[in-house]
Length: 158
Image (cartoon, rainbow, N blue to C red; front, side, top):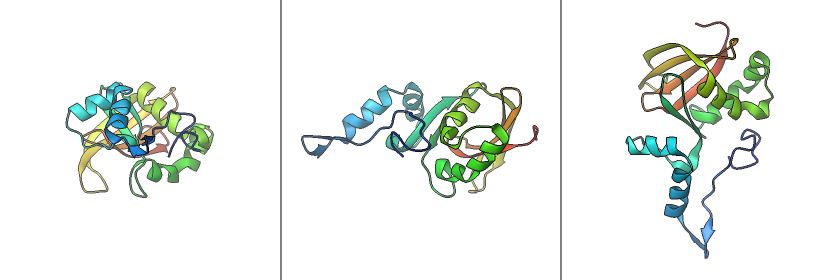
């Protein structure tokens, strides 16, 4: 998922890049971290993150810093894409705006429910329900470290 992806909606993508024909991973990683203070905060806290796989970082109204990675079929953006049609129908967004919409839901939405639970991967995490723009409810499964496992729209607040 790089710049220009259907789901990135123009968010700045980061690639490995090369310098003089050699991959310059450390400098690229530092550039990514320096451009994202929330990512730097997560890394400083000890969260295990691959910066080049991060789609976005955000901070919700409760103060939790979270991040979305590309993931796979069971977690992260690839998993959330399975719910894209639900977001289109229930939140009245265009599919290509999904990533920006998710980030806005977290940054601007009100957390109306937050409960510690065991997630589908068997690890302890948080079930959060966000209310966005006073009418759009989104359920998020978020690891205790802030990793966004899943998000999907729901009807009502529970």
